[in-house]
Image (cartoon, rainbow, N blue to C red; front, side, top):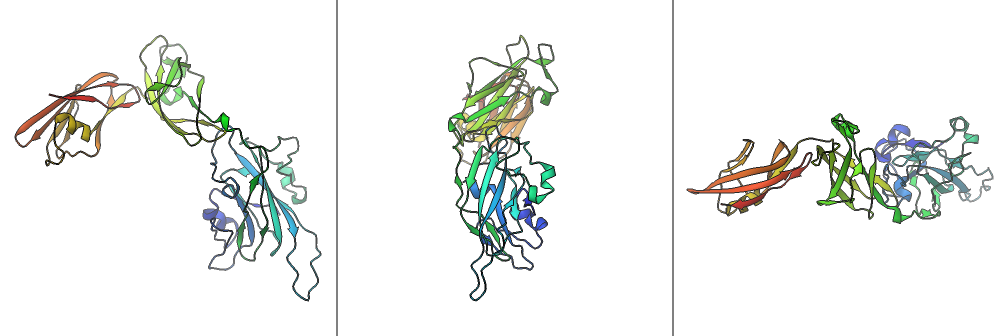
Length: 368
């Protein structure tokens, strides 16, 4: 019998696949308070990846499968003859990294060792015709005409227990470790998110630039249909600004923000919000109070923020915590006026800010 497929959280869904099963992934074995219980050996990515992420990225582990080798029968009961039936090995299908497999037809008291083979190809599958014949099941570590595994792990002994779930443990990477020097983040433009296409026409986008903390990630703009790839350090978080340009125009027509978290030895694609032609202005209330020369501990005061477009935001009981935002602002140089009262005194300040499409800017203010 092939291994059962568990997805995507074994503890949440295994009960749907093995009647009566309640699973705890934090220990070597678990039992449930109600009968009947399942007897199974389970493998999940958390058992062998040692904290590495399952992520849709080039160079990351995308699919894997496990072979369970039956290495020993249980010790014979005193006075009974030793067990002389054949040892039965088991194998799973290839599954997505976030899934797991459960081997239900294990011998109670039998000892097993798992070999796990992983691949970067998210489309890789075992032969469905062989899957229908368990005795002919395709070996996930030696695919017929397929690629060699990118990752091979071997795990220590695990003993199947009656009405208990046992996880494999002490898994070691036997293949060459991934090349961590190829840790990258890539950013691509998505014109379709704004109903546009790449090209040189009036309603098309020609190029884009990506910035991190205000600094460009490349010296030259990137062609609309290309992508920008930058080196990264594992676990480094990227908060990026992307500006897109039409042909022949110096000012950006659209913009957005993108985010990514680098994974060792993988190329992670940044996730970007839809392109927008308008921007925003966010004003920290602490910065507004400082610009007005107001003491945050001096009690409530009426704060009025007026944009040069006529849009206003009124904060009757302003404090120095939080922020307010103007959305849908036309890009360009904008001016903002702050007014407030302190007892009978009127306070005012002016602010300037450069608004870019798709991005939110913070103004610089001067007290009057």
